[in-house]
Image (cartoon, rainbow, N blue to C red; front, side):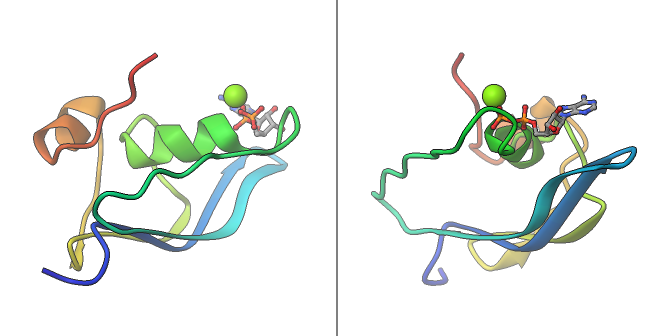
Length: 86
Ligand SMILES: Nc1ncnc2c1ncn2[C@@H]1O[C@H](COP(=O)(O)OP(=O)(O)O)[C@@H](O)[C@H]1O
Ligand SMILES: [Mg+2]
């Protein structure tokens, strides 16, 4: 297993002319708890939706335990152990 459970590299997500995620880098180690903070419209929900397969990034990479993953749905992410609890 790699150093990180989940890693995002240079993830970009746009909605039409709006750039919601502008080259996001994120690294999560086993046992860590992260707080995602930012003003309204900062991209917090979009980030969660990208890591749970609701939205697909325009570019960039997601790695799970060092392996590149592509998520097309919340079913895909749930199978890999990634879920949002609302
Ligand atoms: N489905 C969508 N269609 C168009 N624009 C969106 C959509 N989701 C988010 N956005 C836009 O992306 C930006 C980030 O939104 P969001 O991730 O919801 O921010 P936060 O959760 O931090 O308030 C905002 O400008 C928002 O209007
Ligand atoms: Mg939000």
